[in-house]
Image (cartoon, rainbow, N blue to C red; front, side):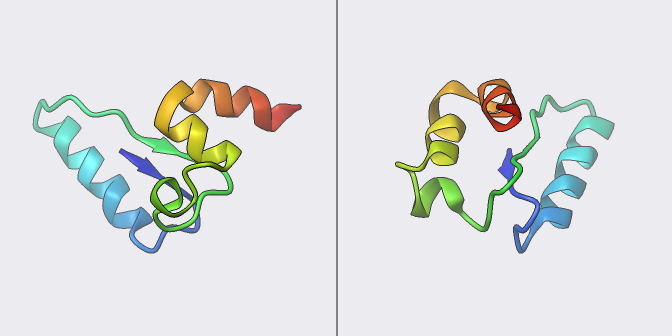
Length: 66
């Protein structure tokens, strides 16, 4: 699950991921710094969108530190 800190449904998505884990489900949750609602859909060609859709959270974390 990918979400930004400014996401309208951030709290619900985090709660959903937590419940999945509590009940034995496998989930991967990423809170992307700078991400807004549906950033990966509306801005897929942005640096953040590309990382979310391709290289992943670790790559974005490294890029954000530079």
